[in-house]
Amino acid sequence: MSYKIVLNIHNKDIMDKLLWILRHFENEGIEIIDYKKNLEQAKWDEEYVEKHWREIALSTDSADLDDDERLYEAYEEFYHEKHSD
Amino acid sequence: MMKDYTRLMKSFIMKNILIDLNVLLDYYEENRRKKYPDSIKAFDFLKHKDFAFVSSSSIDNLEFLKYSDLSRAYPTKTRKEKLKIVHKIIREILSYFKIAKTPSYIEIDYEDIEDSLIVASAKAIDGLILTRDEKLLSKCPDITISPKEFLGKYVYYNDKSREIKMLDLSREIFNIYPEIEKGLDKVIAKSNFILGEEVRQLEEKIANYVGTKYAVGVSSGTDALVLSLRALAIQRKKKEFFDKEDLIITTPFTFTATGEAILRAGATPLFVDIDIDTYNIDPEQVEKAVKKYGKKVKGIIPVHLYGQPCNIDEIMRIAKENDLFVVEDCAQSLGARWDGKQTGSFGDTGCFSFFPTKPLGGFGDGGMITTNDEELYELLLMLRKHGGKDKYNVEYIGYNARLDTIQAAILIEKFKHLDDFNERRREIAKNYNEQLKDVDWIKTPYEHPKAYHVYHQYTIRVLNGRRDELQKLLRKKGIQTMIYYPVPLHEMKVFVENGMRVVGDLKEVQKAVKEVLSLPVEPLLKKGEIVSVLNSICFSILIY
Image (cartoon, rainbow over all chains, first blue to last red; front, side, top):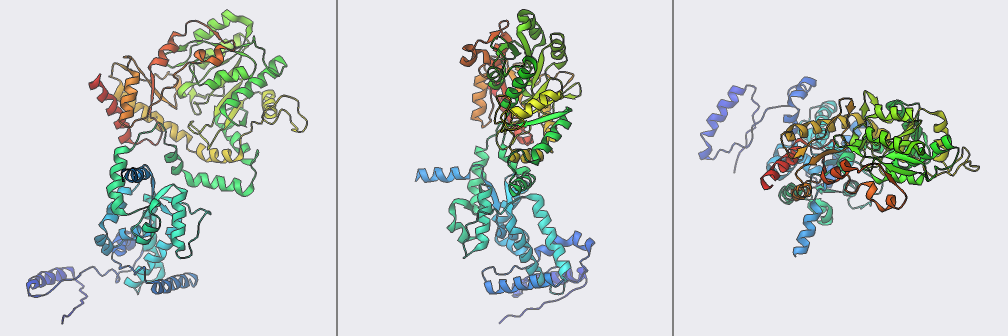
């Protein structure tokens, strides 16, 4: 049995401190899977995109290309959105 | 086994690379970057390489896939916001790589239409698809390469075997292909293949550029010379052709077409020596020839060899004083200037070649005649089209010597780059000059103070008698060089047996033939390639 905690931290200093503490428990079975900036909260205006687009692009988790069904659904959604603009 | 290995290696040489969508996506996602490091290394290696492409068919898919990924990662974001990110990615990719078209000759595999499109793109650029797609790799082993194989064999082998060519035409063409393709499509769609609108447009552009009233598009540089001489025979002698005893002065240190045109126009070539510093016809020798042969001399064909204008002031003076025509052979000199004036604007006519390797080269043969003389212009229009204004009722012995519309369309697009390319050649020449100036057994090209040399060829003289050895050594190091020209015209059977005349001993020509060596000077030559040429020449000193 294992447990996962997903936290949303609004202060970078706190996040760094928390990570520092958690790393002390790595031998006790705590595994830090991922920690990243919450890029979703900011408004993606021109200035933000200019600065963070690469970071945002890199942060995705791509679809399984072999899963045709899922791919077609996404495709349909993409074009439906496009033509309903 | 060994044979297979050789075949495989050969198929890698200088092939263009078409980057498949999966490699592009690997580059723009952290998880995939960790999982597929070879994709990342290959992508980084290929950035800004002139042989790296993405298929036009991949761009739309890339937009959709990355958009979908963003939708899942950021469900609250609007379509507009997500597209901003996707378009940043696409813009960056297109700043690194050229687009390979998706041609119409697609062999559609209905099991995987996407693969069919990318395979067709790869064929259009004679390229290899860089892909991680195992299915595609096994289905099309001859035109695919995995990132791992690419980083190993392709990079290693091409690095070792990369030749520095005199002119890498495919590199030049692919650099500006989208513009050329647009012109080609227009002509094909209209199917106005003979004397279409593009021919007229190019004639107008060249006349404006050279600074003459008229320009006539013809089928080659050689035909430009022949038609000019035929038109001059009709104008001056009121005869279809010159007579055998009519002499036309030219240099024997040129391509055979110059002398051949004289014979084809019925006259006899009178060869005179060159000025060894410029490799161009020596006006003093021209004057001597005129004195010696008097009224038999009808005209002069000065050749602006390697892109350096002749001393045209002197040539024109001699011509004027002796009532001679001047046909400028500008096959290598489009853009070159004498005292600020373009070559091709001084003589009765200027004859340009659009042979693929020329400063303005087409996808085959082509040429242009420039003139300020209205009568000659009218005659040239007739001669290129069977000899009459009405081709069903002709007046002169004419030719089928028109410039194809399709060539004109290509040349119009390439013409936009002419000045930049000429300037780039001048920069390369300057670089060579500076680095070779202290090598005492090499004579770098001399540029006359009144000349704007376009360095169609950068030609040195190897003074120590070991020119051929140097050429062999450079060849071993993968550097192409050429000897323009190994046999002077006055030693060719065709001229010897057709009554040529010679003034003097032509000793400067003999010297040039033994000593000249042209080095790579193509406009897209890279800094590293120039350094390689220079290093190899300097290295040869150690062997001498």
